[in-house]
Length: 335
Image 1 (cartoon, one colour):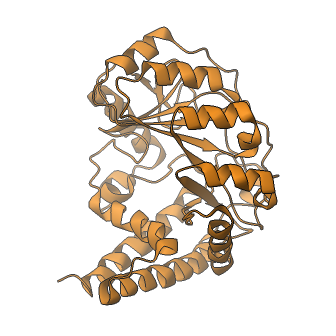
Image 2 (cartoon, helix red, strand yellow):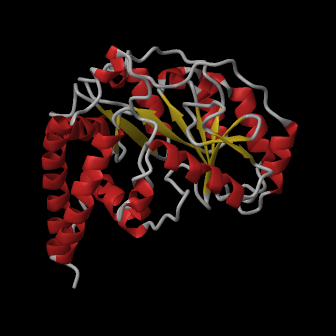
């Protein structure tokens, strides 16, 4: 199988213990030489992203994978809590390999143990040396009503780091029925407020862009998320995680529907299988967990969202509201 985008789950080790982390803590698997050969032979590969656990605890594995890349033009991302960026070995590794850093940051109302990390002077100096910084913000009950506050925090982060750091939110996925997870997850009541705020700021972005030719950087990713959804046309079996261009694997080259639930149910095959076989198994999984999705008119755009989440219906509610609204909003400016 040839793929353009590869996301690799390096392992479950982590130096944080975030309250709503949904990773499946299992024994790590070794890096397969067959998988490395598959990567090396894939001339279609354009982007690779490292996940965990905490990827910065797997420098050796990352280096071996990077060494196997078919060419130097493949872009590299790392999704990290950022705690080890002050470590010389980790930071120099990122600089040497030209890796784009995506830092998980949920605002001061977040539950992560490192929410005040951006107050560390040494940490800020390191961030200022990076060419680009991306962020990933989990939206859950604690911060869902504070959209404006979050945007102000990201303005402050941009000032401190001297980079354009923008809010890119995603929903907390409740992958088990524990009280702790369910009590942090969004309900449709929370989603109503979130929709109100999201629409408000996307409306402002579109107004500024179409009337004045101004690209509001701090709101750009909010609009980009919806714009990309409307431009996407998934076929049955495809999702945002698994499709003709993208797959997610462990370090053995096993493909999974979800990197955070790697088991017999979510197993789709290996990188040596055809994309048609992978998507067929993905479609079977959607049929089991959410058979209504494939019949929905919005499926080509949302790709069924996260069907494994106990609150999938809430995420579904978001897309059923926001995408038709966004289409109507765009029509006001684009004839």
